[in-house]
Image 1 (tube, one colour):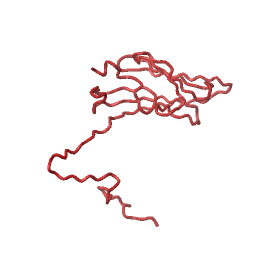
Image 2 (tube, one colour):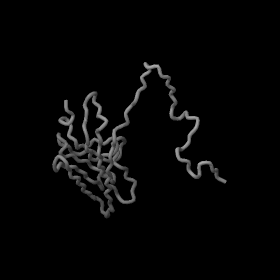
Image 3 (tube, one colour):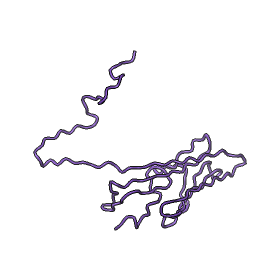
Length: 170
C-alpha cells in the first residue's frame, strides 16, 4: 500500500512542536517505518504575549494549545492557543491548503480583557532528518571484534590540538 495515498505529504506530523509539516522524499510503508531518504520540514507557529512565559506548543507535554478543527484530508486544520486563562486572551491558528505545494498559515489574536495586550508571533522552521541507520556485526565470520561503549574510553583527544588543551587554570 502506498503511504502517500493514506496520508497527505502536508499535515501535523511533527514529533516536537504543533504546526505543519511536509514530508520530503520517499516514504516506505514496509513494517510501518519511513525510509532513510524521507526528510520532514516542520513549520511551527508560536503566538505569545510579550514578556510572558507562554510555552512553545509542544506535542509531547501539555502546553496550552487545543486542537480545534480538522478536515478529513488535512486540507484545513486549526488549534487554539490559550495565552491567558479561560480564553481571556487566545490565538486561533489555522492551516489551509492553497495547492499541493503550499499552505496558508493564519493567526487571529483575540483579546477579551479590558486592557490592551502586546502580542508576539514567533515562526520557526526546521528540517528533521531521519534517525541514523543501525549497523550490525555479523559474528559468523572469523574476525575478532571488541565492543567498547561510548563512555568507557581510556583516552580522549581531539584530532587537531587546541591551544589551551594542556593548560590548567591558575
